[in-house]
Length: 109
Image 1: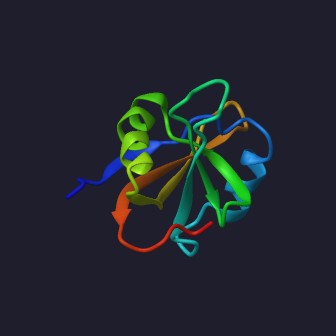
Image 2: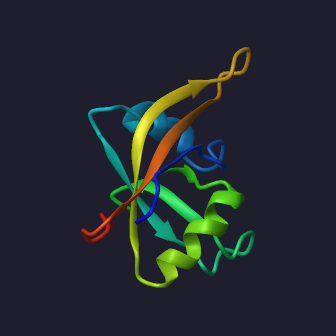
């Protein structure tokens, strides 16, 4: 069985990730979908983390995506559980830490 991995998300300053983390990054939401982006021009192992496949909150870091992408490509399913929001003063940007867990349920997309 897969051992859960706790990691901070990458790419949190792109698109609407900052506002989505502020709005949806909380324990009440619980879990986020993980969507494989094999055609991503920047990273062939890219895995996007979002709420319902709509509200993007970031991507798995490259090293974590390299481990998880082949598993997803082979049909295994994963969710990102909310751990906490991080803040980086003096900048106003925020991030999010998630715990990657395997699930036997269908992905939330």
